[in-house]
Amino acid sequence: MTTPKLVTANKFTTFNKNTAYVIPVTKKSDKLVIGANGIETSELTQIDLQSIGASAEFESLVRLPAPNGATYALVGVGTKSLNKDDLRNLGAAVSRKLASFKDVVFGFETSNADETAAILEGAALGTYVHNAYKGLTKGAEIKLQTVTVISAHKPTPASLNQIAVIAESVNLTRNLVNMPGRDLFPESLAKAVQNAAKGSGVTVQIWAEDRLTKEGLGGILGVGQGSSRGPRLVKLEYKPKVGKKHLALVGKGITFDTGGLSLKPSISMLGMNFDMTGAASVAAATIAIAKLQLPIKVTAWLCIAENMPSSTAQRPNDVIKARNGMTIEVLNTDAEGRLVLADGLSLASEAKPDYIVDVATLTGAVQIALGNQYAGLMGDQAAVDAVKAAAEEVGEMVWQLPLDKKLRGLIDSDIADIANVKMGNTAGGTIIGGLFLNEFVGNRAKGESDNIKWAHLDIAATAHNEGAAYGVIPKGATGSHVRTLVALAKQLG
Ligand code: BES
Ligand code: ZN
Ligand code: ZN
Image 1 (cartoon, rainbow, N blue to C red):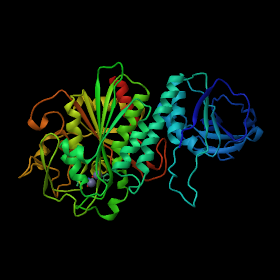
Image 2 (cartoon, protein in one colour):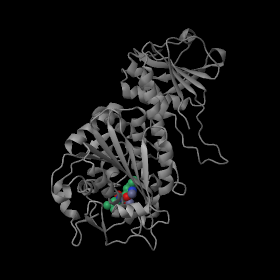
Image 3 (cartoon, protein in one colour):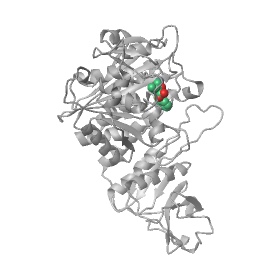
Image 4 (cartoon, protein in one colour):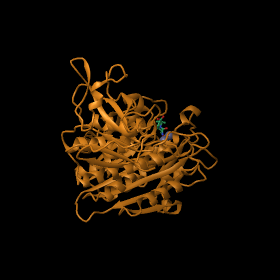
């Protein structure tokens, strides 16, 4: 599905059929009033807004007929001034509610180009629905072709292009993540990424099992060995003409996580097709970064496998060897994300990038700790600060958890260098996941220091929205944090 065309106009000209004109409703001394807008609304002054159910409540919406077969959409904007995040969310929610129109025109008087851009960005991000699998029944539909903001404050064409490129990347992530495991498996995910990267300036390498063996990627092979659909590693590279910094991204790409022989209970298995969100997100962000020609080198490593129980599956107590030579005792085959990332982080470290950010639906514990709107963020403080700043810039939510080194002893192994879990321990699960990953960055396993600044984003709770759509977040795959990664590349470049 494509995002609507984003347009700005200096002034209102005429009412058009099949078009909704968005008019702000606010309150002045306890009375509902039409807010400042650039649309012809003289006939609305006769109307008692209260009696038609209009409200100043943020994002409330009431429709009224307008001239020439057009529609007024009276939208509540509250009584306080709206910041960029509010405008983005409003642009999204209103466009989604009006998605049965061909055109939507916002008559809001924005006070600078960033505010205008925020409404348009919201419209592009908020008008996504997952209806690819509807058959005889009709799913939600988006008919919207154009969203216009009438304002004297216009974003530059480059800024509008950037919004469109990023929204397409977010939607690419959502499309991949929403696919059932039947259709999306390691080989098909790798191919889908390769297709999406065409023409972007990103080079793509796909490593199948023989290459994984040759490269010593015991984590990815171990997790993938139970599935008839073998694992893959995908390496994406974007090398700009200018730019000295190097950012490496690593993504967890489990196309379905049954838990393996440490099988998940049926209820916990639902939604585990989303377990490749990290890989899809870092791929989509890399493609957007390349399309925008940001001046920073980016290498992305997608660690892709299907975690299945079978006679060829890895067993609890198996010992595998990761790319960096570290041996891992697999006590729980359901803690598989850290096993594939062990290889990805080792590989990413070899080029000694300035920053490594890994993105993974790693632990159910992060939902218990932080709820459904914040991603867990851990790692080296400089990288954590950079990711925090980028997330703030784009209105995505992250929360730092302490990588408390005292917990590291919990995953000592009697027989290998490290264990992937401490059985029976549920405390601090997200932090323990982070401590495990830390061992595969640079030379840390050997106790040596390195110059890599590493951050880990645990997106297990934010990858997927089980409730109704809100703001820029649709139902299902959210595509959250792709925009953070692009903003990070922009800030570091
Ligand atoms: N893919 C899951 C994490 C997950 C849980 C993502 C819920 C989204 C929603 C991961 O592979 C997993 O199973 N983690 C275990 C770790 C445990 C065995 C230490 C978990 O969270 O239970
Ligand atoms: Zn798992
Ligand atoms: Zn998993």
